[in-house]
Length: 274
Image 1 (cartoon, rainbow, N blue to C red):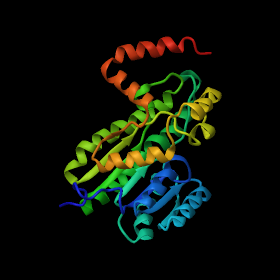
Image 2 (cartoon, helix red, strand yellow):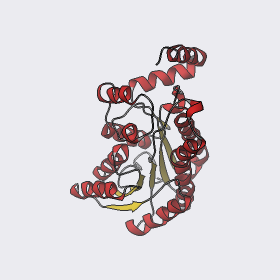
Image 3 (cartoon, rainbow, N blue to C red):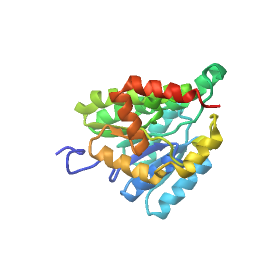
Image 4 (tube, rainbow, N blue to C red):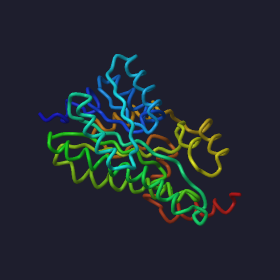
């Protein structure tokens, strides 16, 4: 039986690389993998935050390593792929492309520099991660990929055009790779949550922060730990999509089955926003 057949699961005893592992969902992925017997490369632009995550892994008795990496820089991601194998003493079996930034605003008030910055991290960061790890997975005959998108990839909320487009690209890439890589025994899962209590709103350039902060505190319906655990379980089950929250599932269903109605309601509701 192959490595990722019915009895063996890619999230257990994994040799994993997690980008954006210094906080939020990325840190939760790293911790959950550690609980499942994994060895984890914690990559982050913020090296201090990544080191804090590694200390948490070590407290669980797991092996963890830090690599400072700007995922928007292809040379740094190429180096990450090589360092990962050297540090772990084993070829990676799982890559989680999680690093991302939040950005939003009215379309005509956003600069092309805003577009470039967001695409570099949110979309190109995932492209780079897949580009440098997929050949390694093909060579060893197995592997797994989790790409962190967002419900924004299909909800298309107003004043979030840049972020929406970047995450829609991540979802489309994941769907394509899922079909393309099945014959190589490489599993793909794309995570599409709505609001999860992380630093992406706090550190991002997004509109209506007060409203979003309130929603994160009172209406998020989940935690980073719960999202990470569910996503890894979905990956093990061979599922392509992880849509963790009730509101995300509702939006997903509306967009699939009544797209014109959904778009009309979205536009109608936006008229009343200040």
